[in-house]
Image (cartoon, rainbow over all chains, first blue to last red; front, side, top):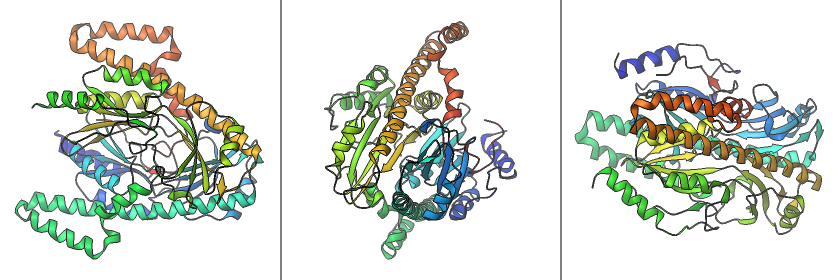
Length: 258
Length: 258
């Protein structure tokens, strides 16, 4: 079987299986992205989460939490209020941790160039920890990941270590991150759609490539908040990141791309 | 110029430049890894941080911190005590955040297969958010990233929102993460060294590949805590991760690798 046929077979097999997640379905905020990718021959999604606020009751040792074994006291993909967290915390008897986990998406890609297109759209939309994995036999995956998280220990051996006022303050921040995460998902959807349209036009009508580019430019001007390219610079400025642009990391600026 | 010559030229140019980081030098705990990679023809490192505890004084809005513009109240690559954080917090007048940021490393690779070797060693050592980036002109980067972080808002508009007891509790967790991070760095160094040795032997003496593999097996048995393969399973179990193995994410288990 050639690679394309093998990819088609794997995709059909994968998408035909039941969703094995706890929730059993794709999160509402990412349904459009998942559908957009799965209708394309060169992609299929293998896992996703739109982003969530999570309260875990872990072992009595901050970093030895095993998410699959520990107790999930609360999980929500929507903004969260203090009373829900306070009520959930009453059930904690280990070390409870509040986390905000941003959007994550795993996509299997037919070829490296497909993963590159996806990676570029993800990074341009603010998902700067995205990356490609290529297995020994050529299986190519793209993971969309953000730097935009929160992880706060709240109790120790069942004893609450912070005030209710602090929990309120913290949820305000977590909810803001949730909101920002949602904007990035929308931006990613738009970026991806534009990139896929450009790719289709370039492949099917190479001669009208130029025309298509200028039409895209007009669209960007007319609706800047939905444009892809424009958002990227703003995004990169506002994001605290442990990465290349951080002057605290030992780095040289690479003078050119090749 | 062919690709190999171009890579050699870029490497020489990059490594010949001054280190532009705040610190101006490579962190002690990652010097061995940086040297190991830079002595190999197929790699050069472009940035690194061994991992650190950081106290930032950001804008009055948790997620709008701009790391380059905000004030760094404290930064340490070693375990941290409460008194240092309390003293540093006195200088905060915005929203101070305590972060633990794990090891991060960016490596430019000559070919995709070099990035794959590096990626595999990183994931096997516990750095599960590692990923490859391939630019439009073929520039191939590998980023080593961990899921192992902490991000805790401590004050709002200069007012401390938590108790000293909580800060002590929090630093205990941050210091444990620092310790675990250091173990993973050592594991990564060992994994990488083994992978590079195997690669060299396979390339230069394909006929003794089998012999080399068995000698590696013996080495593993003799010193299991330094072995690469063994650590990987333990690691994957203990790590809380927003990823494929998390039953909360919409996912099917992919039946085979190809």
